[in-house]
Amino acid sequence: MKLVALLRSISVRPTLREITGPLQSCSFQSDFVPKDPHAKPKRYKYPPFYDPYGPRPPPSDKVIELAERIAALPTEERIQIGPTLRERLRHPKMQSISVEGMDVGIHGGAGAGSTKAEEKKAEKTAFDVKLEKFDTAAKIKVIKEVRAFTNLGLKEAKDLVEKVPVLIKQGVTKEEANGIIEKIKAAGGIAVME
Image (cartoon, rainbow, N blue to C red; front, top):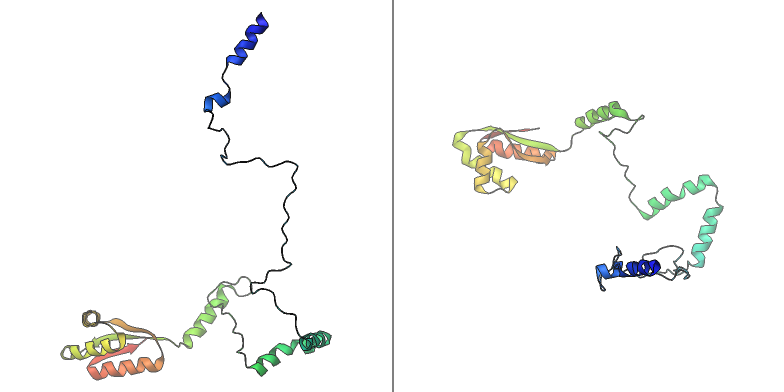
């Protein structure tokens, strides 16, 4: 009798399926479908190397013969092939990357960068033109000249000229800067190159 009561009490308790409902699931992945535990993983065949341009035709006999002849050369002669081909085919020489101003560690250090920066200042190639002052009677002429080489509107050029001393053109060559200075001088202003 006690056993029957115990079995009834166990069977009366609701199961997890009844608590969550028939259409709900307790798993974290709602779309999870268990795999067959005995199934083997799929194996995909990948090419030995990836070529974005697709398959290429095999090299010609001439190219293969040339490659074999180059491989048979001694190391000293192989080193000369690149520069010789660059000259013959008129390819531009590769430019080295500048590391000026960068701390490159033990070899370059901050001291080496500062000396290179000082040398660079001596060989300045880009200049700025600064309007120092102008004659008030020639203000309109100076504004016209400033508009001519800055592509500013009338109001912007007028505001720029009235803020004297001010940079009016940046990063120009020495010849271009001298031309701008001469034009401003002819209009009645004083400009300097920095």
